[in-house]
Length: 491
View 1 (cartoon, rainbow, N blue to C red):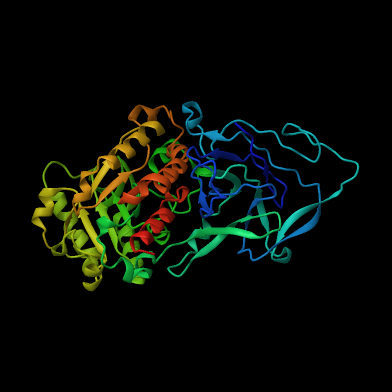
View 2 (view 1 turned 90 degrees about the vertical axis):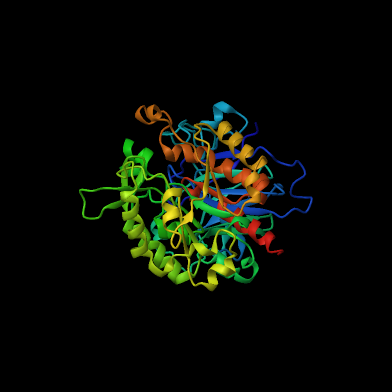
């Protein structure tokens, strides 16, 4: 496997190791054959590093992918001292390797040596030079736009974890009018021409922005990004400082509900438990672990749809704690949902056959998809039947890939109007959690999210309906969904 040359520039000259994955379904003639060069920015779960990936790159001598903190309009060569050390680099990882698949984007444990001014040293040693010569380095916007990472592409499709930390305080400032923010990635040639560009982006109004094009489609016809265990988050939580065995296997998202919706998710996987001793009775649970108050989650959904007019599937499932064997607590929950959501609830008389235009005409935005048929039958004015979650319950990427391919290759549900969800995440078993076998859900997500992104982007996306993932910011599912939905509109 060829080594990937990588140049990593930090203002503080602190250069963490940078990992790269070589995607495994590359066309050898990609790039020069005219296919569109594309870039993506994602965020790793475990260390929250910015990730850069691309496809159909020409990968010529002199090409670079540059990460900046502002929108780059121009790139120009500048003379700078050579005292800034280069970042270490690792061998690219091939997802065909079962042993390497256990190491993921940003989660490698080997310590990579640094490449300083001259020669090769190990961490903790410094190579000194008597004279510090000048060298040519790219600048942006006349030197006013800081370049924080530079990568030399060596393959037409690659995925890098840069080592540049993403501050989630940036996401907390996103509004329903936001677009690009935080970081931009540009693919340039040896003359500094920008061949492709992307950014970390919010997608708060993708449905309403395409109102006319999507209006005649059903929810079953769309590719809808979703989040798994959507309510399993903690505000202002930093896994590098506060991670414990409990949080390793309880938390599944880094954004709160509003943040997930602002960044494009339109399916929420809601697991409600009943906690009798508390004044607030209903909470989100992940297994038996109590998470956020249900009221908090509902309020964020209401605020979002009121501002955007987007349509959200609120998928209630499992009811893991406190519901017992009869339906008494379910009746309490349904009454609570009616009280809290009020007029935002889409009337089930529309059925899953309804188009988006039908739903918007009713001026209703939240579909309560309740996964207990006995309850749904008793509330025909309030509840839709639950969406079909296709869960693999697997612990490794090869088994998850087989599951996702199987349910899409033999998908008889395409003839139904009821939405289906591909649950695209790994699931640890009980003893795996007790023994911390997998290193936590963040490490498991980093292990598969780039592969899931590739699989749906290149193969399964055309016919996918809802795809839900852990730590969705580490995937390109939202961007792939928008691309596929754009094609369905005929654009």
